[in-house]
Image (cartoon, rainbow, N blue to C red):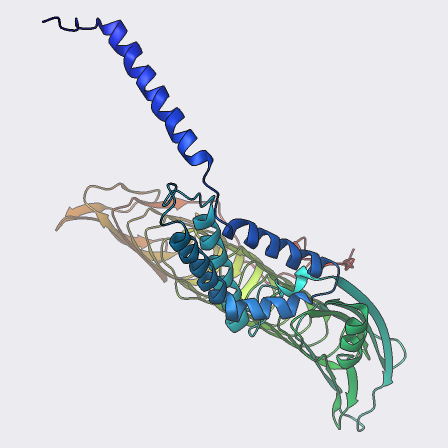
Length: 505
């Protein structure tokens, strides 16, 4: 009986490749007569029709996305029903089970994500003024400009107080020259038609309502409306501003400025009294303030310069902080850093990993974590506590009590050659301890220690660190420093959108 001779390897490879090619051809032939699912074209046609209606203004975008945020699961149910119907129709079809979904699964996932996101915006984002009304901005845009003037009268000797509330839009406050309030507004609405926009503009027109102590300016809140305001007030007025979403700029007032900004940058300049700011998101800058500056909340960059009073910063500000020429006490309080500087003649810079202070007098107190510190021109007392950071301090005269406690980091202290103090410094036994003064260094109980009197003694200098070197350096001879006069500041100043910054040059 004859048998088929075995194939050589090359012939076997050709035979296997031919069989695979034939199998693919069979699959293509089998599925050629099978129709794809009707779900995908129906969804694409529906999405195209809705997009066309929104773009042409026939369907208000805000109404559609509000509806979609509530009812998007219905579309998923409808898609499932259609797929079930197709399954039962095709049960006896040779192509049953092979009807092409053509990306329906991915489309369903995308629709579910959009629906979930829209529902979240409806319940959380819009109600809290976030995301700048993203869905409403998908509709047509309509604009409107307005101008309002009103006299401001209060009792003799009273400081007028003007309250300004704007839920969505920038606020710029400047001084007027005629003792009146002048309001200029630019309204932007995203809504289905010009008629609806005109009605919305009329319903949300800002009003100036006089009060016994001044006036109230309130912009009604709408999800699909923003209103940029420029308000001119009599210079002696005190401004109380609340903005939920937008930048705030105040300049040229002789009285207080109280600002609450939930989302947006805040900028103040040339203020004749105190500034109080509460913010949740954005950058803050203040320049040439005759009173004090107090701020709290959360935000990004903070820049203060030429402040005659004190400066107090309480909260979590995650950007760069720069303070320059502050006449009163400086306080900075966050969850990781606490700083008190009684007199800041120079500048203070702070970011996530570094702290720098130049030309300041104490007693200065600093408590921080994972901060590298560089302090120069320090007079008076100094108390530092740090972990996981290097510390460098250069002092002048008069020298106050200095206490530095560091864990896992180097400490370098430079004092004037003619300074008088009592010194004690300790570090780990395996670390470097060196001093430029004639002080004995001993090793005991796993530590190195230098201790003794420098000059005639006086102030106490106590430095301790672990897992880091300790250096006591002799600087140049110095004379006692006297308080200087604040000069011109070169600190950067943030600008509000559409506003040209004035200078003090």
